Amino acid sequence: MKKYENPLTNNICQVLSPLIGDMMASGVIKAQATKLGITEESILPAHLPVLAEAIEKGLVIFLGSEVAQQVGEKIKAL
Image (cartoon, rainbow, N blue to C red; front, side, top):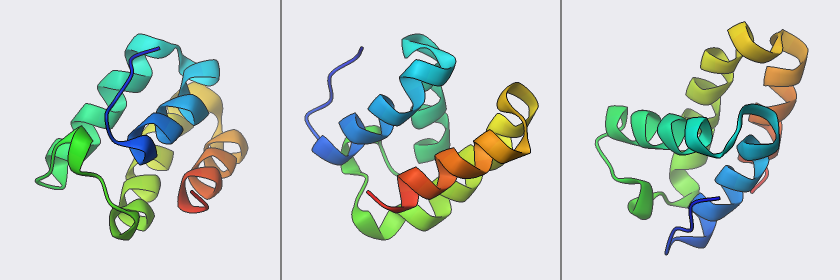
């Protein structure tokens, strides 16, 4: 698993990696952070609701709506 200096980003990666793999988890985090105009290393607790919602929407195709929703809730709770 990729290690980030930002502990919050590491926690998000730990939620995603078991479900979609390390490489895809890193890619999802990078893509969604970029859409918010930030980097993976600058994710703050204030970003979590929007970030979690975007990640959840993207994961529905891969994991189904129920599991994607659970992932979103876990990320929001970080």
